Length: 457
Image (cartoon, rainbow, N blue to C red; front, side):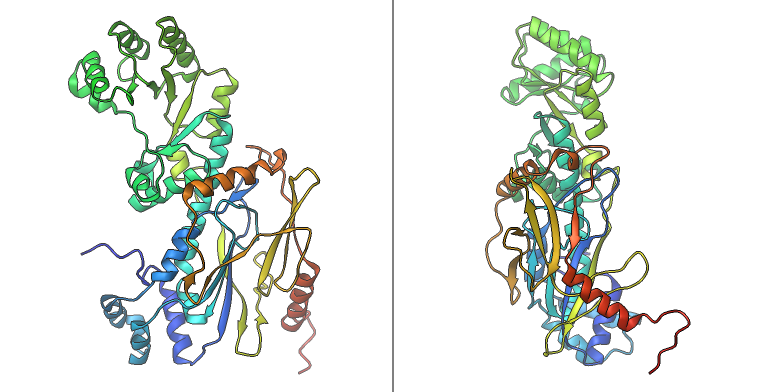
């Protein structure tokens, strides 16, 4: 069976399609607005970096039901009572709506819309699953990468996690998101080809073991890659391998430490390399690293020049998911939008289409955000949501990933240090405008009856 297209409308949850069929059969066709946001930040996180918009817009421009997709749905037992007219509608299905979004690389915080979709309700409903999965996944990885890069204190960090990612495509997109978050590059060649991200590699223990003689494996590898050789030195004995390199007259670009006491080993390796006049040979470390391990290594004086971070980064191991949601905020039957909310305890939402404004202190650093009704304006603040798509077409080409990385770097430079801490980060101030509070209270009063007080109507 061929792999599904990245643009197949079947990349969704079944209930999106059963709701779509119910809307269609009921001739219920308002324009609807949905907003995608993260309810709360994971533990130890003081910020998020928005990522994944390019893939979201690509999907919206190209999403379709193929003839084979429609055959699959016709045969599904959930659709036995659905008319042929609905499947005829799916033959020409495409996204015709409008999208507002935060640019990739923008700092984001809990309950702030990362993206808003306004479209015929069936279209807006069907695309929910894809938008949530691609935006929250890449945002999660970009945010994790920013923390790892901060812990490295200016040293290079290479994303090494493809083999531990949750599937090949996840590995590619994790590499992209990690680069947005500040990584120097990735080991994933497809990500390099697709996005222009620098790619890096070393060699595996298997290469050294295959030759049986460590010196021979080092010689052969360096002779073929004289400008790029990163020699892995812990297959047998790390310090003995360094002596082998020195006595063989090799001059590798880097040596890689992948196990053991990285603080003590890096100090001893640096000392021996310098004594042998290999001062240009850098020390690269890998092996179950994350931001906490890296920060601890450097605090204890490790002599490491660069880090390869795999599992912890490509899976955001300590916080492997975001509480992303995609909520209906208004419907419009042609007479203007009417706000919609969810009022359930601990999961209440605010009605109406919104804007997000960012305030600055006198020194240029960010001081807080306001989530406001779309009609509101705060002239002294920066609006964060931009219109990026109308009538199903992008309004401008997506920026290069290098530009997105630079945007993220500048954004983080304006975030006060208490919000960037690896542990115990201060909560960034986000408030909802009084106009949104008023509209929420209006709807709450209309739908929620006081206990013991029956509806007089």
